[in-house]
Amino acid sequence: MRVSTDTKILMLAHEKDWEFLKGVLRHLDGVSPSDVTVFTAKNIAVGADTEATIFSEFANSNIVVFFISSHSFSDDFLYKLRSKAIEHHDEGRLDMVQVLARSVISHDTKSVRGIKTIPKSPIAKSTDKDDDYIEVVEFILYNIELVKAKFELLKAMFRIKQLEQEICELQK
Image 1 (cartoon, rainbow, N blue to C red):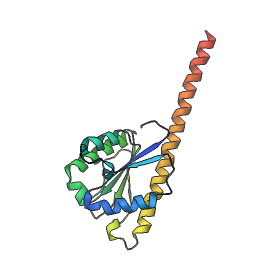
Image 2: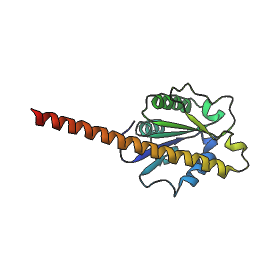
Image 3: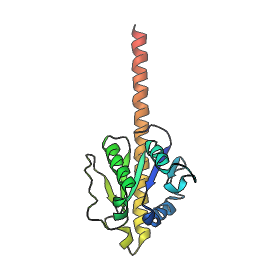
Image 4: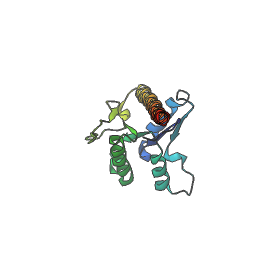
C-alpha cells in the first residue's frame, strides 16, 4: 500500500457509465476529508496520453473505485485495469471497491481478500439513485478511514523499529 498522509482515490468508469460516477462525486463532494484527492479520466489534460496518465494515477492510489457494467467489461483497457486492481488489492497495495452501475451476468472476482460490490442491485435500475450513491460514499469514507488507520499503524511500527535500533546502539 502506498504510504502517505493524504489519500488518493482513482475512480474508473466506462464513458456510458459516467453519469453514475458523477452521482457518487456529487455526494462525496463536501463530505470527504480535505486530504483526499479523487482522480477520474475527466482530470486528464487534453492531448495527454490517457493510458499512461491513468496507470500513473493507479500506481499512486490507495483506493480504486471501479464502476461495473457490461460496457466496462467489454472495454479492453478497463478490463485490464480491473484485473490489475484486483491483483494489487490481493497484495494489500490498495483497496478496491466495485460499484454495480448496470446489470451484468457476474461481477464476482477471484480475489483472495474479497472485494465488496455495492449496491446489491444496479444503480441504473434504482428508483432512488441518491440512496445508492449515499451507500457508495459511506463505504468510500469507511475505506478512507481504514487507509488512514493503516498509515498510522505503519508509522508506529517504523517508530518502534527506530527505537529498537537506538536501544541496541545504547547497549553497545
